[in-house]
Length: 196
Image 1: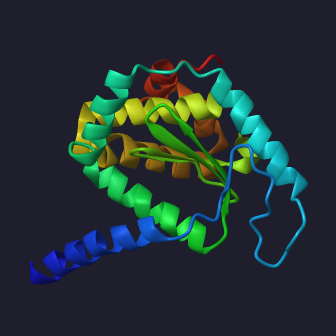
Image 2 (image 1 turned 90 degrees about the vertical axis):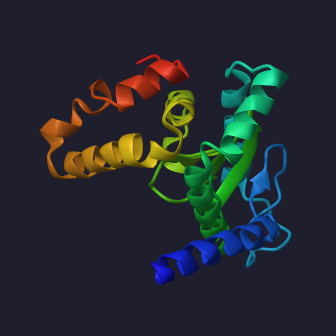
């Protein structure tokens, strides 16, 4: 019990450290290179991805200021576990230079990464640069909506179920064919307004 309490305290202490890290990702509208070994050059792919993300986000409906405030409160309270993990994962991606670009959308931050993984953790949506499309962003935003429903149980319900289905899909292609037809993926599509 004591070691678990110490672990929780260490994680809570680490969050401000990760939040204080200098932002290394390229923000929408910027063409500055994020590679510390390349100075003075523009990474054309990053600039294109930044424009692509901005174009995608132009198609996502904005929410009211009141809704943004209430969802921000939910992130700080009801959805805290996934936000802690999201903050830690974002910090890890920054430390490993894996963030390509970021942009704010409504109450969330979209983070395009060099990793093959996509996940919605609280107010952070991580999307692989190889799979950056409007439907992918909408789908992951749908998972964020699920988080508002299940709060601290989101990781147990949607997170674990989605993870297990993804692992099984990698091993059994026949199972992968119906991946988006099963819960929680079909619900995320519906909540995010995905058209397939």
